[in-house]
Image (cartoon, rainbow, N blue to C red; front, side, top):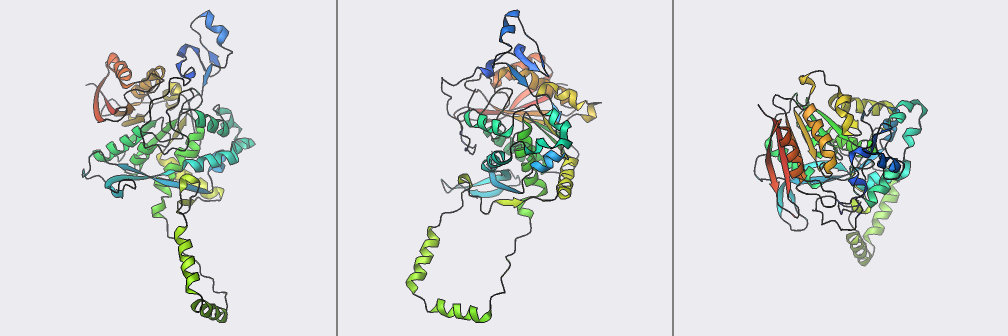
Length: 434
């Protein structure tokens, strides 16, 4: 198992440090010839047959579309979402993008940021621990239950706590990685018109790049794909809701209801007692209030950063029907995604494909590239691939991915963004050759 060196509690804005040499990477180094897909296994040699029954064999989750109006998903939505702000600094301040001014709490410096909402990771873990797989026990949803072959919530949470990646089981979707933030900042500065466009984000996880595009137009279609259905249900979909259909900054203010039941005489008597009280006591109370710590979502204190969702099934169905008009959600392996989408002609393909932090394993490059190549419009379509130049412990890197593309000879490739940090980060733009 490979670990990016983030803890499960990390807010993912810091560069990861070098992975230690003793980290287990066996599962990520399995060749494609030993992958089991849809119950059938193809092996390269007779010698490998003996290892098919071993725990190292990887079964991938087949591609399928999430039914947003299923009872299981309606029940999976919590009654309250706890959220936090993802404030993403612009690459080039003053570029004219729609930004806000934020103050860095560490340095005190002000900076231009793109502000998006994201569900708090602690909230996700709390829900998984409370009602893992509860919605999959509904007998009326047996069809969707058969489609799901990924891990249960508690199993995935345990895996996420020990490794950021477990090939064929958990692909890191609970966290937000640096390159996704780079992609949001880059898109913000481009100021493209997305009206009537079709956009796909592959390996979306928290889906901030795709969600940013979704917030830019009421007529754009943004489809989102992640390996795990639990990630889509507990992270991706809530983030879509927070940034579009139930934005916290667009909710009416909550008005406090005063209690008028107290007798006027009692109020007057209390007032006299207060006026005649010891000033020292008042000062002590003020000091106690000042010493009270502020709410910290990282410690599980979500005061002031929560929003209620509709409770009734009809209201939830109405909300998700609105989501469904602009977005589809796909789960599972990239290998069957294009067949699942079943494009009839070029007009059904995507104008823009986004993906970030998805080239960490070199053996997955062919599937990712084939998905981009067969899903992108040839006339004017482009793909943006945000990634680190190298992923320690796994072997995936931008150079290998770029060589795969250039060998095929179908795309022009150029670097449109580069950031120097512990490991350099880049964004590649792919456009069909004319």
